Length: 272
Image (cartoon, rainbow, N blue to C red):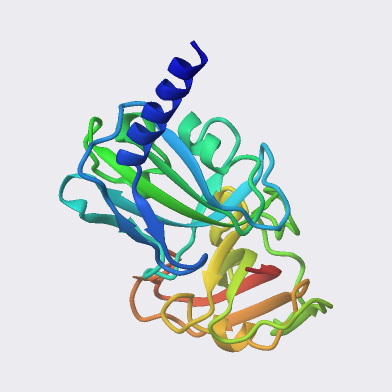
């Protein structure tokens, strides 16, 4: 009987191995995914590919993660954040993502690489991540979990804080953490408003909480690279830009309205 049970275990393990994708590459770099010939079962499977050493993500956190999504049929790349300079924001409040995504992301230490394999109908995440995938289509998702934060971490708020008149640009609060540099992946809370009306047009709180951005021209709104370069984690910075001639969207997914001077107040939460 024991031999039979061992044989079943070996057969089961072999079957799992035969349907499990192979993932190579370092954490933080775009993963290389090789798919086996056999299609997996319809039940979502979560695998921890490597475990990080950072704080564990918790229920209610806003989790920032890079993600690569691959279609099983034809091994076609479907969605990736590694090239867009836009890590994904996932709110673990039981309402915004599926149980499969929560299994993959909840209770994981920052720095972990996790794989989720299953049909799209059971693995739906944020709409911007899965787009038009057919419900029965098998997808492979590889997450590099950057960190998790409370939604109100160093919250800037839905309205601008009181600013001097005339507006004073630069550091409003000095931080004491590590300095931000060009090309850094920075975690921020922010609010953007038209000046001088103060009408808010964008804020991280409207998107659920902290957001990760890459501090490069084109990936963040005009003025951010110059305004945040050299500032330290824990700082609050006011950044103004001249009137933008036409509406645009950064590669980081932030909308920049046209027609008026803009002011951003940015809290520098972390570097990841």
